[in-house]
Length: 156
Image 1 (tube, rainbow, N blue to C red):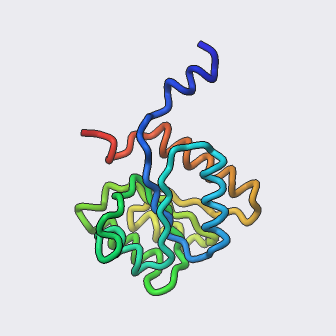
Image 2 (image 1 turned 90 degrees about the horizontal axis):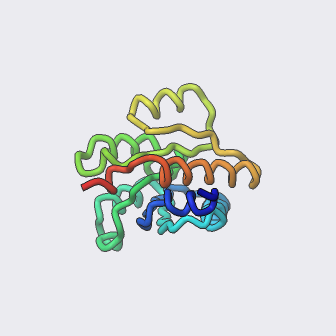
């Protein structure tokens, strides 16, 4: 079968919700642009600090009608509550713990990597600083997590 036709047949038809927890407006824009460039059908929701992330995930206040994310991209360096605190809350909550969390951060400190996995992060990625490499990372995330992996929210 030709490559393009096979690729279309393998794509899942579900629209995915990705929650980006990121306080840097530049990184938010880069992520939005990178996902747009992949052509994936993604509803990218953004919160900019740890307190808002937990409120979103617990569907509080203005987040009561927001969709449950299929995937979370989490920066570690956040205001109010840091990424580690958010990750701990996610993985201790029985309603949230199955949502895959990709730690996407500028840190490459061994302590951050180990602590993230100790808190049950599903993946740790060092965020590149240039657009081309950043775009490539977002493409890899989209291809693996949204096209290849079977996510908990997609099974009945």
